[in-house]
Length: 297
Image 1 (cartoon, rainbow, N blue to C red):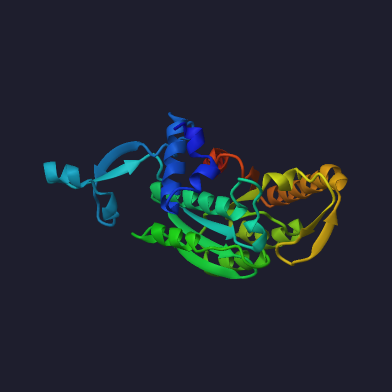
Image 2 (cartoon, rainbow, N blue to C red):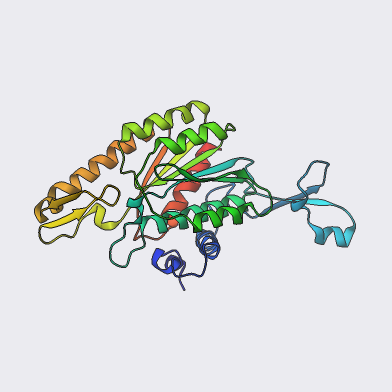
């Protein structure tokens, strides 16, 4: 199967578990890169060096030790000695999907798992905050054995449920994470951009590097309504009658304006922003993430 097909969300969602999804996405993506243009992200072997007290024993090459009775550490080009915290929106609107597409939450969970797996391969710590109106789950950044699987279990049980309060995850982050690192926010951002930035600014003052992945279903970018339809807000239950003309002409302009406003606000706070269509393969998200990390090195 072609690498591009392996990264197709509708193919990935049919895999047996989220760990297999993460491995398929990352390994397939790295294979597709062949010789990576991102120095530090190839994850190729770089060199051996003698073990010194304080080194992590997980990186000892025991095969070398068995042959030579000397202890060496295996180092990789991808080591960056930093940490990543992923903020995943699990509000009700993230449960939306159209046609054969995956839901925004399914796409977000696969993306979060892939980023966590890639970070683990980099030998860096990963943390996770799952939120809606409240912070529902939190995993502090760690590289301890078993932590990656704890992240995956947390992602697997995340469900689209209630409304959104973007202030909550940022406040939780400031309370429990003080070390500088990378912050990735995955959401559909149906929220006032100014309110989002109120939460972001303190993180920027901390020196955190931030990337925002804006997930939208294709029909949220360009609706396919052919007649007047009554739509229900997935978070409030409010009903709204929408004409096909409004959906075809005015709505796309409004969603583009909202996305542009969010992008300007994020970039104004020093963050990176990218919109992702949930029908598209996940290589764009990984490329954006690697580019983001490369600029922050």
